[in-house]
Length: 482
Image (cartoon, rainbow, N blue to C red; front, side, top):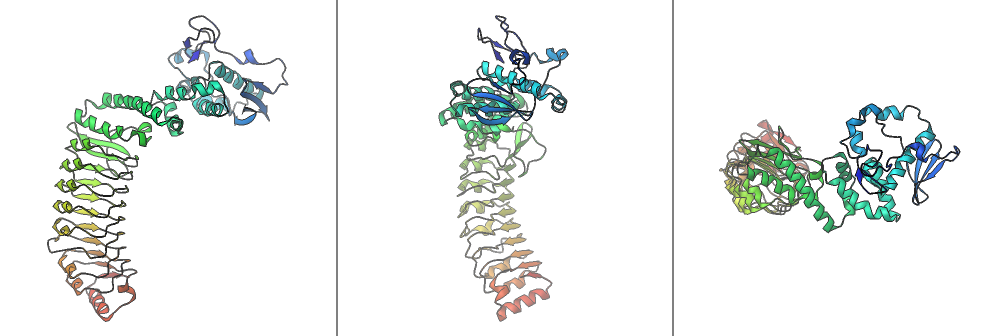
């Protein structure tokens, strides 16, 4: 928009004269071009000067080179002026135009001097309208306004934050996205950020509600928005992207959900910078799959235990210190992934997960497992690599479905006799453990196909008993990797 220098009335960028008083508000090259052609610089104001150097227009701020102007971005054909009456900024005009015009101007061998005065005309209008960022393309207006603020231009200092806030109020425009991605929010203090985020969240909320209120129940909408609201200050992801329905939810899903009968059945928030999960997560009672990978979560709310329809929960690559006791209430859970967190122990209630088939806890700080871990009778895969375990897990014949057991990269010193209970075990990983003695119970594992003992004393310092057991295993056709 353009402000009339005489009466202050706001006008559209396509207006040449003020709609209220008729004063000329748009200037052409001829309005400012001096009669002497040899002049190769033009002073916009006390802070900005343009210079023509080697056929290129260069912007100087307080006599310091700031930026070389690339080219005059757009030219609106006279016959198309009416098409742009509803637009309020150069960025809007640029997006509406056929972008071939940009290249046409760029490569049309425009006379450098003519181009110089074109840039001068644009910057002159920008300066006379109090650095109104709608008059220049955002990738020039905001860096230049920031620079002018830094060097002490009083007008720039006054309008800098206001211009950012004003352009952010239409959250999903290209300008707002540019400002967020280029970290212009960092110029606001904590209180200003909080106020700005309230405004932006209301926009986001209105967009989301308007789009999905007929596809999701009210409680589902409110819960999804609450997850975003409590994390909005910590991550700009929610301002640059949108939570929306997707065809498939997995750990690659940054923000997406699946619904059925107006209920959310799958939800993904990965790589979103989440620091909190609100207790309202428990209201998604039909949720079957939940992916919260690669975030900054330290804890989970106890309400996670009300998600009794949950079948898969992936919390990998977070900063989880502990799990809530209520995790044991997830009676239908089949897959629980906790890889790469900071867990030192598991709640004993985890043994209540009778239907759990896959439990993966790689890369944590576990020193011991719950004594009743063998009550998870449906386990097929138990991954415990890269922890601090010193004792072999408490296994029993109850774990009759366990096929893969990974204990590599721990501190286990002995292989317990109870290993023989695992009748259907196919693969056993023991790499990088200080195990010195081997149990003959391994010979009872009639389903075993692969034994990994790389970088263990079993593979390096072989005693007679070890040699005998390993030879017997080989005779049974078991692959021994050492």
